[in-house]
Amino acid sequence: MNTDLILRLLKNSGFNILGSDGTFLYLEDPSCILRSFETFIEYAWIGISCITILLLFGWAISMIRGIKNDISMNLRNLVLMFGTLSVAIPIINTIWGDDLFAYGCRTIKVSIAEVNEILETRKKQLSEKGDDLYEEFYIYDSGSQNKQPNEIPYSEAPLIAPEVPSDVNVSVYGGVPNTFIQNAKRAKENGRDVIYTNSDGSSYRKTGGTRSWRNNNPGNLKYYEFARKMGAIGQADGFAVFPDEETGMRALNELLRSNSYNKLTIAGAINKYAPKKENNVSAYLNQIQNLTGLSINKRMVDLTESELSRVANAILKIEGWETGQIIQN
Image (cartoon, rainbow, N blue to C red; front, side, top):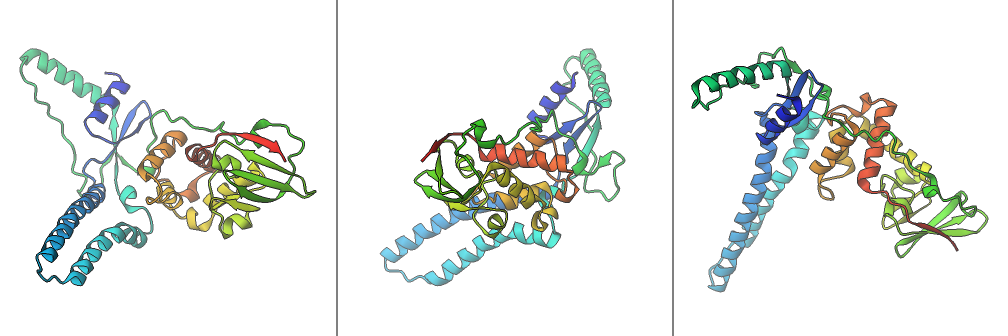
């Protein structure tokens, strides 16, 4: 059986496939307690939300009927329940010092040749018996204290056919050779457009495209102190505006190399960069993996300059980069 078919069957069976190098398959430990705990918290949120709706409905009925309720105590209990669930994962990650829920899951290394040998043996047995459809696969207990001989660090597991955007470059001004575009000194928002003013007083407008392109801000960095230190000349819709696209790309790379990101894994960095309250973090991480070919549990400090560039270019692609028009005022 070819590798692609084996991978597809494993995926359909619910395994999280980390990759294959042609000789081995790399699977996330399906019995990972930490991953299960994260799922439990998500379901707990849903359960408590349903209970809250029922409680609110019950309180409303009882108040209409004149029954006294200690509303303040009930609300306090609800706040405690929601608050505990909200801070559980961040607190555990802070104590651990990393993204524990991703970092804690082991990788299982399986020989493709052995899988095919098992399948061929079973196929022969089934052809002889005809009606014996039960499979017998032995899976080791990942909770055991004995280290498995085929276990490798999660961060070393390769991914399947990564589409590495190593050639994704930021093209200056969308490739438009306009002589009126100089080194802008100021920028301001005008509706959805951004107006840039040059040192000689002339100005031009970037209109259409995406916000990141109009702002020369590939990473959609907010207009905070860091962005200003990196050369931001204004803000539009709360996001920093840089004088040119190279400056914006350099700011993104410097942010990923800063102390607040360098000690994290890629997963931890993306959780910090694109928080859950504003983004679908799981989808974001999947795109990072697919675009870079890097394990999301590799530490940022261990990334080479080439790998860091791949992460930055992947962020650019995910954040959206579509060019519009540049018009002289």
